[in-house]
Length: 111
Image (cartoon, rainbow, N blue to C red):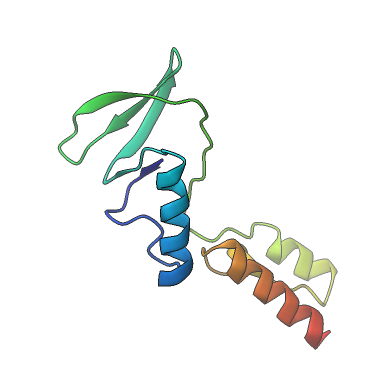
């Protein structure tokens, strides 16, 4: 697991965060914080540290979860055609699945 920030899952509440980190450790998942994933070449993930040094990391599986900026490109075109358009979850603010589900449930109750 490669994370650019110094802390993995900083927005997550402490108890579920610690539970998840424990499960990752039990499954022997390697966690690199303070690194940037740069590219995949010949089955290796290239990562860059803060000093700019590249290092190869062997990975069984690569899942890309990128971006920390909300993006709702259809919002304005839809609002021009449909009066009731609602923005929820990560389109409002990047967070986690729990926050996205709570915002969806909250909207459903209001409707």
